[in-house]
Length: 532
Picture (spheres, helix red, strand yellow):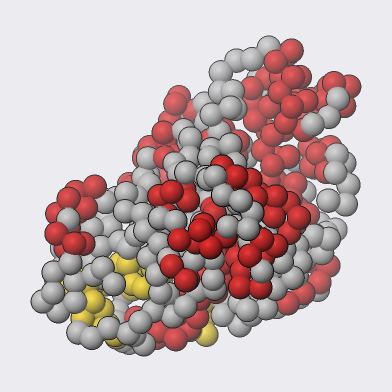
């Protein structure tokens, strides 16, 4: 394990000063104001640091390294250590290729080194060894392909300080390392290979169950939450028998796993990767022996999104929310929602003026329908949004098609179970960056949830209005984690979603509950894929 233990100096310690300079603000020991603090885990003692009233532990191993024989195998427990493990720096992130994101979203990403020793988690807690606080376990975005728990927008100090909760963020296997389905090519040894990234999350929750009491948390009150791919991970775990009982509430922000990849498609993806690496289908052992840098060469920007959880009948027995919501988690209260113009974070989404012809062409491409049906969709959206520009109409149409309609579908299917409540929101607080052209992009909700506006001005801007709303949103999320009721001072009572009333909390400077907001647009997009 490449860490400093007692007086031994590792390579990691040798580059500590360099890493401290490039790590996201708030996540480096060098920026803490307090001294060392230690806590006990089932595998050994860890040394973190104090940041004001909060105790911070970074890069704690919850699983063994995933290289060698552990590559594409279910996660193994970490080896115990003697002495005290340094937990003052973020652990490595899973090997990955960079995504082509707009700078406002890319800014804030962590710069941890990449390694297959990536099963690490970070903890922010008001106190060590005392109290039973709600635990909020965050799964990062980036789909199932990129990202890490070290993004500075996930810094847990404010959430832990202001709401007396324990915050945990998690790194896990991604892209080909987490979801390369090799069961067809390599046999039973690789039966779980298409879902090991999800099994890593189960292992992280098992670590929380077994260790979080030592960090002041309550293992009987754990909320999992995440945005984008993190929301997909949350909703995937809601359908997982292995995760049953490891969490008690769930929040999925701008991401829902309705369906996953079939074994047939996943096997084709595996064969294609091996072909790009010059390997025959039977040479799985050579693939396992490759350095991760070489394996990563088989993951191209064009194929990146092909790597996702596989419905293997084992770790993922069926599609999580299609055709019904998972009954196994019917007793788990859920928050889910989306942002008004999610797709403005994509470079392909127009932010400046477009003409009628361009709008029609883009809608055809996005919805994959003919010209006549596209024109009908545009007419419905234009009537429901009088005065909206052509580019805003496209932003609304593409965002509803990508996420917002599935939020309603998932909520409907949850309500049909007759179990715990589902609370639905629609985030509409615009950002002033780029002169407001981004409107309400994907990821904009994150700094409001973590109350990290000051660390997220590139995407959120700054100002009293944003800090006030962040206080409300973070309060609601923390109160939900504590009690199952997402209330916040200054907000109306937030009722559970029902198919007949479809009550949604529209989050803005003046938040309000609306029955079936944007009904005409929802029905128009939903009709394109009835029963999906």
